Length: 403
Image 1: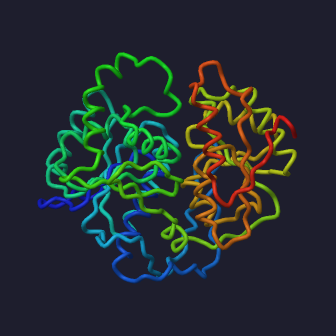
Image 2: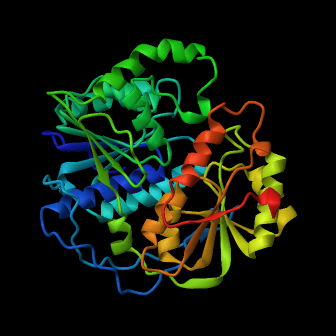
C-alpha cells in the first residue's frame, strides 16, 4: 500500500484499471514533464537488452530485467509539466489475477518514477465500491486535473460525477479509444464496440443517467478542457478536444534496445473471451499462422482463459508465455522475434512505436468473417478491419484461411 496523498490533495489524479492504462499514464506524464524542458526528440537508449520478462503460464513468476533510463527530452506541445509530487495514480484493482499481477509490476515502475500510487480494492466485495468512492471523494473534489484510462468504465463514470476538475484527460485503453472519440463526436451514449447492437440490459438502463452525465463532462466547454493522449489514429475528434500523440518515448528511454531473435512471435487476443470469435476457428487460425511463419512463442493476452491456452499449447506446439508487463515493455526489453504476428488489436499500433529504430517487423492478420460468432456485434467486422487498415508501419497479411 502506497502513501496517501497529502492534505492539500494532488494536482492531478489518475484512475487506471489495467496495466496498459497505467503505462499510458506514465507516457502522458513523461510527455508533459519534458514538454517544458527541451524541444529535441527523446534519445534512443544505449544500454543492452534486459530479460524477456516472460513468465511461466502456471507459476506466473518472472524477472524484471529493467535497464537504467537514459536521459532525454521530448516535446508534446503541452506547456504544463507534471511532477511526481503532483500526480497520484489510483489503481481501481480488478479481480483477475493476471491483471492484478501486471498492475502491481507497473505500480512499482510508477513509484520508481516518483509518482504516488494508491491501490484500491475497488471490487473486493459488495461494500467495496462505497468505501472506495467515499475515500476518494475528497481527493476528487480538490484535484485540478483528472486522467482516466477507460471512459467506458462505470466506475470512472461514477467518479466523474464527483469531481470539480477543469481539465480532463483520456489516455489510451487500446483500440477502444478510437470508438470513444467517435461516439463523443456523434453525441452517442458511451458503449464498448463489442457490445453495440444488442439491447441494453437492466444495469445499463439504471446506469444511463450516470453515463449521460459522464459524456457531458467529457465534452469540452468554456469551463472544461478535454485532452485525448493516444497512439491510435483519430480522425473524428469533436471540436475543442485536444489530441496529443503518444509516441512511447518513456518506454524507449526506459527499456532496451532489445536483442532480436531469428524466429517469429505470435501475440494472442481476447476476442474469444469477449464472444466475438469462435474458439475452434481461432485455434485453427493460430495453428495456420504459426506454421506459415515459423512462430515458436505465443504471448498470451492477460484475459485469455487457462483452458484455452492449454489447448493452444497442446494442439499447436507453441510455447505459451504469460507476460508480467504490457507487451510494449516486454518487446522493448527483449529478446523478441524478428517478426511479431498479431490479429487486429492495439499492439499493431503501439509496437511499431515502441520498437522504432529496431529491425523488428510487425505483421497483422485480418479476422475472416467466418470466424465470428452468432453473438458478435454487427459492427465487429467493420471495427476490426478498421483497426488493421489504419495501422501504420505494419505488414498486412492475407487471411489465414487462404494460407
